[in-house]
Length: 152
Image (cartoon, rainbow, N blue to C red; front, side, top):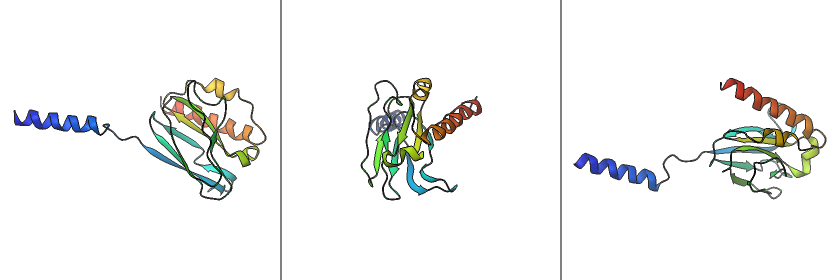
């Protein structure tokens, strides 16, 4: 009987603490990435589970992180971070999210966050991009496709 009571108490503790903790992934906003590219999110491709958080860290000055209208799942809220400030975003809805640094968007400072099953890929790909962002997103969507193939 004592073992059952201890197991019940442990189960209750897990329920009260939310069970497994959601993960937090850090993405740096940089003037120069580790591969030499300028104006980048590092990493620019992030795969997480629903409920996980991405913390966009303003490592170098002059950057922000914000979602791109049309490049997020149905029902997900847009977010806009302030210049030179970190922002932590909890991603609840499954799908792909396009992220940009507004001041450097045309220079290709974009990222792709994939949450769970990416059901809105075609919708996200259809959003027109500016300047170098078009090329960077093409590479990020290629990375997404490669990750789907690798996980099969």
